[in-house]
Image 1 (cartoon, protein in one colour):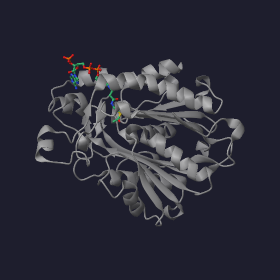
Image 2 (spheres, rainbow, N blue to C red):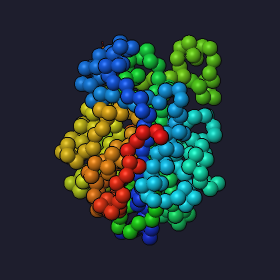
Image 3 (cartoon, rainbow, N blue to C red):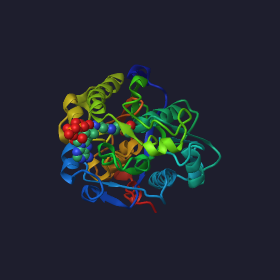
Length: 356
Ligand code: ACO
């Protein structure tokens, strides 16, 4: 397990704080009732087993980079910062528009940024937690003054719509944050990250990469779509979410009792509730929006963070824990002491959604 920013006594001189947030989701809402008309499932099964009631679907005309670009523009507006001020762009995604170039490069062009450093991070649903840690290191080291971190995915384009055990779970979206240096006792205090390639086949897309390129056989067998051993992923998720959050908290001398708000990866409400229970957190200290978006992969945690801020659930000084898990297997948690004074911030639509 990689840990970053070890405990408070060896604080870096600079810390990274979030100064702007934005999100973007497609307009098309697909409810469980819509799905039960086209898939062998029931709205009730989906709701009771996952907590999901509806999700946003990008369709053919909206790409991951379009959602990421709009989320980034919304975050820049929220921070009142010009795209010309951005020094680095990190995009967490595993459903980029192309195998390459990276989605971060497309976002760089989309927001009209200078020809700066831009790259993607592939850690599936843990991607944003990984990318936030990387972005913070650019700020802490003094390599950058302003970093844009985006989580964007359109996994519904990678689904087998005849596989009811996966196609009901996912949705599309993006969200972004702007990082700048903040007071040394605020911002991103600690991160804990982990990965176990031994579980790579628990949730994966077996073909379409260089090992098994696209072929007629691959397409016939739908091996270019998400395959998942759900119950095994479930058990892994419940265990690792609590563990990694507690580890990250301990890295900065905190415990679960210090947590004001947990922002978990929104894959399944039962996974979230079990993890919260293991951490001893009551429901009012956990943010949940899985019912409206389903699992948006790398966008899930930052969309939840954006909505939590918009809903007034986070105040200056609060301890906020972001925690994710996903394919790889990967997992991670960030501990943030909220550095922005929300009462001073402009309340615009920039933290909500809607691809403009
Ligand atoms: N509708 C109706 N029945 C279904 C559906 C569906 N959509 N999907 C599965 N079932 C059936 C199964 O076929 C099974 O039937 P059987 O008992 O006759 O064989 C039954 O429901 C129970 O299946 P389980 O898989 O045991 O159901 P479970 O309660 O475990 O819920 C679920 C399944 C929701 C997939 C759960 O295991 C889960 O959430 N797992 C974690 C998935 C996850 O988080 N993935 C994202 C990883 S993040 C990333 O990187 C992308």
